[in-house]
Length: 155
Ligand code: HEM
Image (cartoon, rainbow, N blue to C red):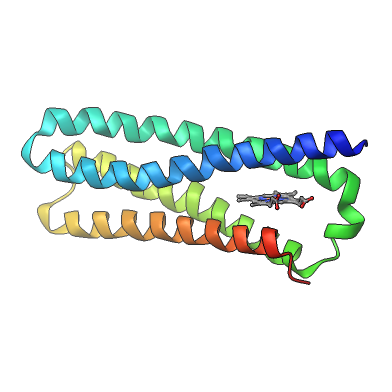
């Protein structure tokens, strides 16, 4: 693989990160706005809820771009990066991002849906909000850890 193709894969990697991590941050902000609006104006809240669902699609697209470009770079330099500590820890963090983002975020989302359908009793609302916040903050923290690992490349 030529160096140009490698750098193109790296640029694509950064674009994928922008989409995924940027959308994760907006998910955090939009959820807070949704929660505030829903308490006073339910129809407006429902519009924001559908926006929250749409965001998940972009998180998935970003993840796909990151994975494809990452694998492409590894085709060329797997012997170099694959043996290094930063890369191994990064792959562990990636698994946590997938578990947190796909499984826990989805569970929180379906609880929210049940709440909106009137299936959740008042006392549990705070729990749902806490779960959402925890999942979103952990996701942002995992991204930051991956940034530090990928830029400093500790070995
Ligand atoms: C959520 C997932 C990921 C995030 C947030 C992420 C983030 C980053 C960042 C910030 C860089 C540094 C770019 C630079 O210094 O110019 C980088 C580089 C790199 N990433 Fe990822 N990455 C992710 C997943 C992956 C995966 C799944 C692979 C491979 C299978 C991978 C392979 C690489 C490689 C090989 C580099 C080094 C490129 C170089 O410096 O030449 N990444 N990544």
